[in-house]
Image (cartoon, rainbow, N blue to C red; front, top):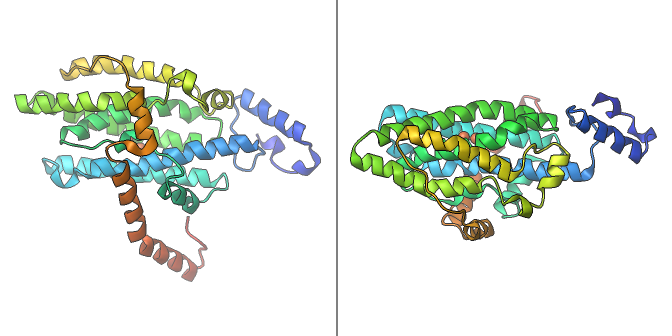
Length: 308
Ligand SMILES: [Fe+2]
Ligand SMILES: [Fe+2]
C-alpha cells in the first residue's frame, strides 16, 4: 500500500480512509508506515498482544513436565517445543512493536491483568499424557485458528504467522505421536491418554472464542480482513478434522455441549490455574531483569542502541 505511505499531510482524512479501504478490499498488505484507522491499529494491538501473551504463558503447563519426561528423546522434543513457544512470543511482540507499542508496555499490561491470554492455559497438566493432548488438540486448534492469519491484512502479523504455523505443525505431530504411543501401550497408558483427551477436548473447543452471536470483535475484524472466518466456522472445521484423527489414535472424543459458563468463569480469572500462571510469569519477569539490564548495557557499550 505504498501509495499513501508518506506525505499524508496534503491528503485529507477521507482520502486516506478510502485508500486504506481500497487496499484491504484488494487484499494488499497494510505495512507499518502506511496510514491506518486508529481502531484498526488498536484492534491489532489487542489481538497480537493476547496472542503473544498466550505463547509465553503457554510455556508453563508443558514446562511442568520437562523434568519428568519418560525418556531423553521425549525430553529433547518437549524442550524444543517449549523454546519454540518463547520464540513465537518474540515474533509477535516484535510484530506488535511495529504498531508503536513496546514489549515492556504489553508485558506490564499482562502482569497487571489488563490484557488476556488464551483461557486454555489456565488448566493444569495432570499427567504425562497431557503433553500429548496439548500438542494434538491445543496446538491443533491453534493451527486451525492461525493458518488463515497468514493472510491477515497487516503485513508483519501475517509474516510472523507463516513461521509460527510451520512450527505449530511440528508441535501438533509430536503430540499426536506421543498419544499414539500411549494409546497402543499398556491398558493403564491407554487410559491415561483417553483421560487427557477427555479433559482437554472442551477447553480446546473454547479456544475458538465465544459463539458468533456473542463475539463482539468478530464482524469488524472480518471486515478489516484481520480475521477470515468466524469462530463457529473454525470450531466446526477443527471438530471435523479431529474425528478421524481420534479414530486413528484409537481414542474417543467426548460428546455433548460446550459449557460456556465454565468458559466465562475462566475468563473472569476463576479457572484452576489463573493465579498460578500470572504469579509465575511475574516472578520470571523479575528474575530475568538482570538479563535485560545486561543486554542493554552491552548494547550501549558497543554502540548498538537499545536491543529489541
Ligand atoms: Fe506457539
Ligand atoms: Fe505450539
